[in-house]
Length: 449
Image 1 (cartoon, rainbow, N blue to C red):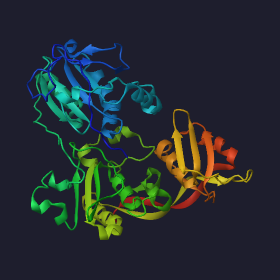
Image 2: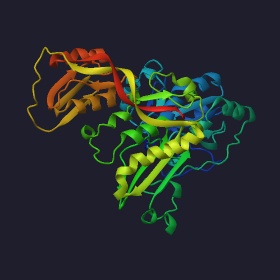
Image 3: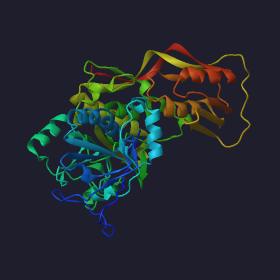
């Protein structure tokens, strides 16, 4: 569940040291940007002027943006292969090179691909300001700004058309530059008017289709504004919405005391639908899903209630989703029991369980060094952090049948993405994961009866 952050990028402007960057208008000539801090590129740097005669797309991206990752993984390699002599796509991110290099090395899809990107920039963004990504800047062969679009416009059909015509026909696209989460989604910044004032809203819910100007924010705890409580989700999938509707509680929010929190994990969702086009689940190949239009698979949802009705937040959200998607997709989501194969954490009986020595309760996960450290924390807390960081896309549910409720202290040194490796480390503490068949409560998304 990621929140897309604003992207800032750096540039060395030849002959413009005393000129402050400003947003460029369509048709203006771009400064001679110097692209540095390059990862997986044969040169240390290059200038925009060296690409004259080619179309250039600046692809602003971030690790927390699912749409960005799909562009980086699928679209850019294909487009560069098809139009290599006429087109250059330059991914740009604010994040430091070491962080991005580490991310590529630990992401299976990128280990062998080694995608090219510019990292650690702080200035280019100022010429093309935006808050959400992916954000695409099209520069023509003469070095002039030709168009600014969302990521959906970067595809084979559009690129081929632009190359054949020599110009773009994209309508002017202006992303929302100031979006405050405390404002109403439907108001689009119109909160100055009396009718949209937060204090005057008794109840509201709204669901929209994909909003490319807004970040991919697939959820989090509900927030309180005065005497109102609000759930806001932007550009989430249908399964994300249902997982939150069944998995998030207003009170208590602490994970150990919220037995439904596990419904947020993809492994606790089952699809019983004839048309699988709309859904992406762990283990499914992403190629077909990524080609499905964003406008049909991402949604924004907002629900606001009086604070006194906060305990109804989930049931209202469930009703909204079933009512809306029941009509538009002929589906419904319910919490039901299903017999499934699970990884169950159990005791081996070969070692005594040693209680914690006390101290601050915390769990540390270090992917670089390959360890999990548990201090005065419960098994539930360990499983939550380990699954969240290392097993999020595991299609097999992970459950606790150890019967251990007391806080523990232990350190696991293992390949945290490999259950067998974690199992070997757990044996030192008299614990292991076993594959078992269990009847579990699941979020079931099915064709409407």
